[in-house]
Image (cartoon, rainbow, N blue to C red):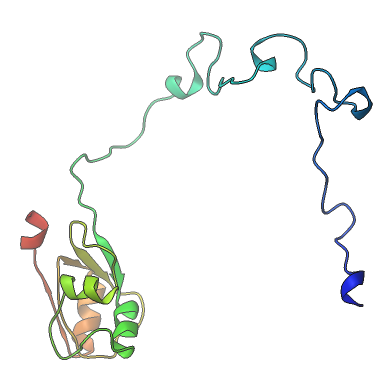
Length: 157
């Protein structure tokens, strides 16, 4: 097979129907929109409107609760931190704070704080100071010989 012999599978690329291009096209004049009425005109946004009947999305009850003052944390996995330490972007000898994680590019912004999760493997002995951490992450850091201190002061700001 040569480059000029390449073809798509038959029926894989279907040409779009060109409407309002004369009677010979089979979709001329009204372009398949019928005669008159709201839907035959341009700029129509009917969406969930049901002709004055209470729409389905308003008949069904709302579910759940969205906490208005919920905290949003920047999430970091231990494997990602290890990757940045290996690349030399984070200093394993000094304490790794949230500001250091932002400066190294591990997280884009702190939001309400940084939360560390245990996904990935940690081999370096690190000293971390973050807003939150999962139990598994605390255990994994301790197992590697490091410390993980959780501070709530920066979350209260």
